[in-house]
Length: 260
Ligand SMILES: NC(=O)c1ccc[n+]([C@@H]2O[C@H](COP(=O)([O-])OP(=O)(O)OC[C@H]3O[C@@H](n4cnc5c(N)ncnc54)[C@H](O)[C@@H]3O)[C@@H](O)[C@H]2O)c1
Ligand SMILES: CC(=O)[C@H](C)O
Picture 1: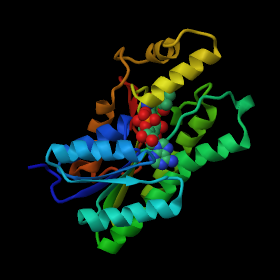
Picture 2 (picture 1 turned 30 degrees about the vertical axis):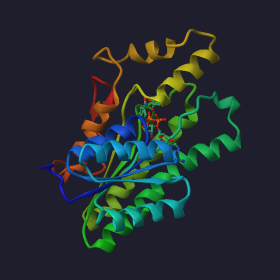
Picture 3 (picture 1 turned 90 degrees about the horizontal axis):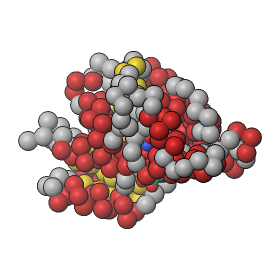
Picture 4 (picture 1 turned 45 degrees about the horizontal axis):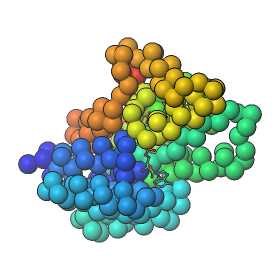
């Protein structure tokens, strides 16, 4: 019996990387999980992994930058999985570009996918919790790059700083409804996103692939990069009953460069 049996969670960007690990872990915790992703195929694959392991799941193709699609996904999840208790606004992109080279189109796309998607997810989840007559948990993906501006990732860093602002503000505004709002801020996690960054940064510097990983990794006390399961273990805590007291906190845990 999972500790969260009967509860329902929605994970955006659940088709790969950190989102996939979160979806699988919340299912192991007992949640029924809606796996939401722009990539329908990977969303269905992760939902299939959950079902094969005996869990309840739903795969939804959603562009999280489109408000109506996010609201529709939350509604469909509540209807098909029988409730709604947790949303994890995890989806994001991380293109590497020097500030000098950033265009308005780059800026708008990145803020729509990494920031407004979090706002739409929080609005949709809070509305659903209130419609169902109970509180709930909102969990947002920030980053170490939301605490320290990263060269070559300046606009990305700006989006992750913005997610922390939205998280801490929502925590204050939603507390009256019994809704907690927290963010996770991983360091460097071995996912397709990080592989892409490593390639782009090292190529732009004319260095060998992997040099960016060595550069970032050298600052990690534990001497290793994170894996998606490091993050999903923390999100499992945030989604569970032990974090009912936490909202908008941002204590720092050094070591794996995991910030809360
Ligand atoms: N990998 C890292 O080092 C790292 C570190 C800190 C924070 N993060 C953050 O964690 C989250 C997950 O990162 P990851 O490394 O797993 O990334 P990833 O690129 O491996 O996976 C991201 C997923 O989001 C989906 N996605 C992208 N745009 C979308 C959209 N518009 N609508 C719906 N889905 C969309 C992709 O299809 C993909 O499945 C991101 O918010 C990222 O910024 C990552
Ligand atoms: C570089 C980093 O921290 C990730 C991509 O958020």
